[in-house]
Length: 116
Length: 112
Image (cartoon, rainbow over all chains, first blue to last red; front, side, top):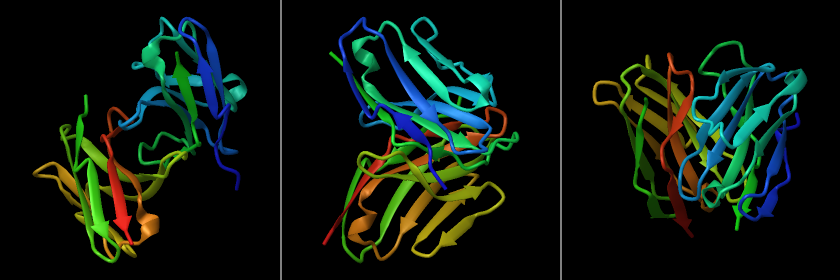
């Protein structure tokens, strides 16, 4: 079974530029998550989708971050404009979904973003 | 919201010895506690989990214990091997919040 795919794996940009990340979840997984992992810390949830609807975006900095999941499959996360403190690994995860908070989340390899 | 604290931040053990990582949580409504292993350049991978109606769970060399009264849970790895070297994260999920809150991670190094 293919895992969660993410691209690009690495991205370097200058502050105030924009950047987009792409995620393809495991086939059949209804729930998709985006996490931000700052170096030396645990992942922090940014946004959670159930199919193509947003379940939780309470920790998403909406003035600069946006995310969408069209057709309930792939998802993109965008940052515009980027700040130095956005340097982190952005992880995408997916789970079967169905409302159970105990569903196992499967993580992709992440995109390492460096903002100069 | 939930707050998860994890100790130690780094841990070095000799191959064959045991390793113990401890976590505490703040939300008494949390009822699901997964542990993740993250190798360099990869995303976290679930290694074991425990629900609040269980005090202990074991899977080969890995075990997790939960003390709901004290609000802490621990990961135990026995007979450690070099391939166990990685960063380990504990997490807690509240049934109401329905989101994972991660600890800050433990860098485990198994010395040959």
